[in-house]
Amino acid sequence: MERDKNFILGVYEDEDVLMNAVSKIRKAGVKIHEVYSPFPVHGLDEVLGYNRSKLPIAAFIFGLLGTILALTMQFYMMKFDWPMIIGGKDFAAFPSFIPVTFEMTVLLSAFGMVGVFLVSSNLKPWGQPKIFDLRITDDKHVIAIDLAVNANFGEEMLSDVLKSADASEINKKSFE
Amino acid sequence: MQVTSSVRDPLITGGKTLKDVTHDISRQVEGKPSMSWLLAFLVSVGALALGFIALAATLWEGIGMWGLNKTVGWAWDITNFVWWVGIGHAGTLISAVLLLFRQKWRMAINRAAEAMTIFAVICAAIFPIIHMGRPWLGAYWALPLPNTFGSLWVNFNSPLLWDVFAISTYFSVSLVFWYVSLVPDFATIRDRATGIRKSIYGALALGWDGAARTWSRFESVALILAGLATPLVLSVHTIVSFDFATSVIPGWHTTIFPPYFVAGAIFSGFAMVLTLMIVTRKVFHLEDYITIGHIELMNIVIIITGSIVGIAYITEFFMAWYSGVAAEQYAFVNRAFGPYFWAYWTMMTCNVISPQLFWFKKIRTSIVATFILSLVVNIGMWFERFVIIVTSLHRDFLPSSWAMFYPTWADVGVYLFTFGLFFTLFFLFAKFFPVINMFEVKSILKSSSKKVNN
Image (tube, rainbow over all chains, first blue to last red; front, side, top):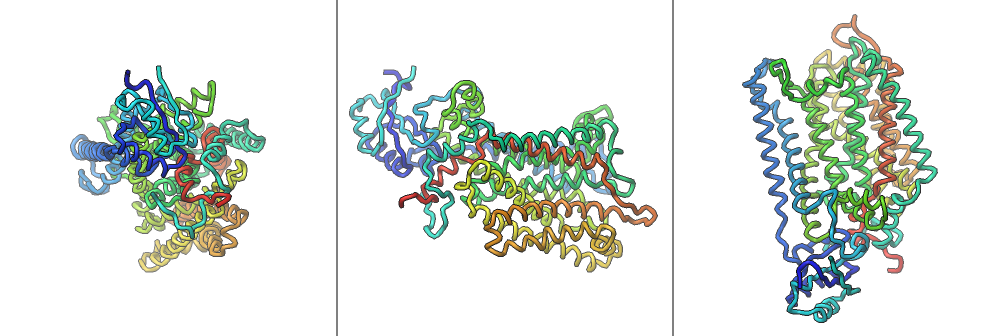
């Protein structure tokens, strides 16, 4: 059987039941493809065993880049390229450069991080998401289990696992 | 899991379920526009069109269309600029600072407040841009672009240039913050829609799939953006206040300006949020989401920031006296008892005295009283900027050049233009975008809602 084609879905209404279900299913040795929710469920990523997002590191690197760029630009323009006496200040009037440096740090940090987020989460205007159940943007949480990945279990057994994990509905979904 | 004390009042009333939240908010986007919306929208577009005449005249003829003179070189334009930027601050405060403080009541109002921020900053930016006289050349004066004069660069020692960077960063970061939080809600609307609407909202939703991994990243993005936006919002009004504070004009040259401007910005911004939200909750029937509790909490912020502003006014007076500088002392006496005394006392009444009425619970939980007082605060804060700018300039160091400022129709018209623009954009937002952050409200529904039979 091919991967990413046939799924069995457990539908949940309550986020706390969902959290318990995820740990139960993972304890049974079933590999969860992904969990889909209408809102962020705190702690779900930990229960699913996901690593912490590295986006803060991206934000830091882009911010640092902004700081360096802003300082380089200002020192080059004001001290080296065309020095001018303004208010009797030093050409390289470092305190005057702080506001622009701060703003450019924030600007690059925010845009860089959001850019990385969009790319890493595959978000783009022409993006066509795999929709397992239309209700996941409304009021239901869905645990998707890939049948091919869990071939050692078989459909019947997976359905039983979901049932014992208090799924309110158990559905199947196939993608072409 | 977060636990909310049972002593706290529910943030969402009416026993809403997740499905009700989706339905109540998406309904506004999906339905035909109501008569009241159409009427309000037409009035805004009318103001925009009428104001555009003044804007076009200013651009065609030049700044001479305004009532400025040799003594008062800054008046309504900068007053309006600072006023609009200040209004914008509440949106970021609600969405970023209250997120860092984990104040859940922000969730029902942050979307609209941030929209207000973005539109207010657009309105603010119009004034310095047209004040450049020939804005089509403005990029060379405002940005460090290579040019044929050497290159002769912009002056990085000038707070006016810092403003360019501060305002444009503030605008673009707020826009990104706002849009990122809209994406999951666009996905909700996409999944309810059919046909052309589905493809439009589908493109806006960027292919959002609601996966736990995406949510996990989304949450770190939201947290870091809030962390960045918090010092950013404080820096913006600080830098705006530097426009005045770094000059040597008596009445402007004070170190108290940065905190005093930031407090004033939050004060006026919350007043504008209240004005808008009281109308929005009524027109769109959102009384269960934006409750009296929300209004009361915002009124408490108004008392606090209003009192800070009041103390700042008194401190300024004290420092003018204590400095022993005759020019400084005269500037303040002239403010309160000179020819612009009426502007000063309007400011004092609207900003310091009337908001103190919110100490009474009856008044701060009354929608009518809140609405009226929120308008009063907005008027007062406009006068604050007018007082600071015009009364400090109109009697300068040379009594023979003392003058008064009288606005022309173009001054009034350009201000009207920004009102038209602000409300046109806000009404378009309110109709076509989800006005309440659905996914955040859903995430607190279980812990902060009172079920009907519970």
